[in-house]
Length: 239
Image (cartoon, rainbow, N blue to C red; front, side, top):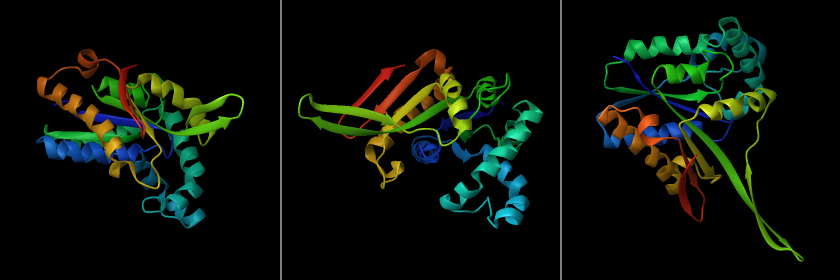
């Protein structure tokens, strides 16, 4: 039986894991599906464990966000080498092995770290070819400025890529997304604890669940969607 896959993409720090947690809570409460997280980076950390311990004295499998930043370039470098050798299929192939091993037909597998659409069979294409749903998350802040001559102006500022890899690969990844979540930076509060952020993800989760129940293609039946959440107002619109 073909696995049910939900993939999440977004820049570092924009809330991919938070989206995954909110989805898990929704499907656990509103469906009989078992929700399982399968990150592409899981195998990357396993393969880089010895090198990270030798070079940095950091355990890539269990480390703080601060320590993760110290080894990020190394992980990106190794991941890029393996992607290049396999033309983008190494990490997805490893993830598929775990998915097929644990797929009972009543599972939803969430992959919260989709980052590439460069090769013909890359991560985004792999999600589509396996009938998966792709959600992209973008975090933004709102600045209000007052100019004596022009009055009040409001600007929306989305987070920026942390490295050249993100800068190059993020635009084509967004193009593959079925849903785009734009949410306000609610820090220090976590998105999974913020009512508006939770509502944004639940809105999409509800549509996905309907598609599973009716055995429909979500993209065909729902179309591409952009869901935006700010502190002051809520809106959703077609992308």
